[in-house]
Length: 137
Image 1 (cartoon, rainbow, N blue to C red):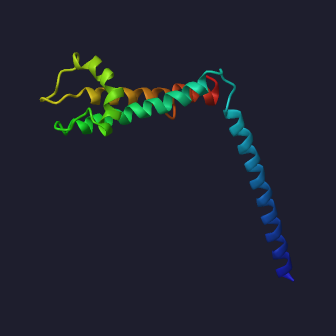
Image 2 (image 1 turned 45 degrees about the horizontal axis):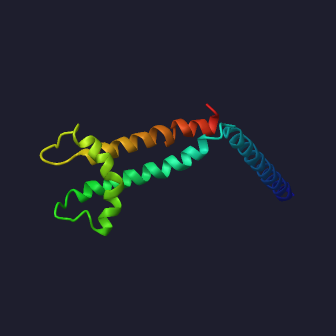
Image 3 (image 1 turned 120 degrees about the horizontal axis):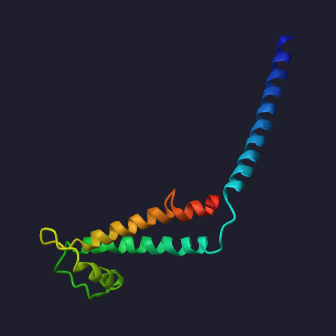
């Protein structure tokens, strides 16, 4: 006779656990919808354009760093031209200001650091645009 009582306790505990789990899901859904705040119309499109642009230029500068290891490579040919064409104007701006270190042009490293920094400041986990979209700050 103790066995049926134990079964009732187990069934009741399972039912109450399922109810509290669904309540927890509802509370989490409500709280996550509260995190996304109303914000200006320019913030999300800017982040959608800025993110891929900064990532492309970071990758292009990384390719330029690797390309600098091969001075005999003809940068005017097709595969290298894809990386050289968009990055050369930026590198030309800084080459006069940043002297070569040990005979190596470090301007792609400077730009890679700058693009990574800007990406983290604006679009990182606690970036300005990210916080603006989440909390409306």
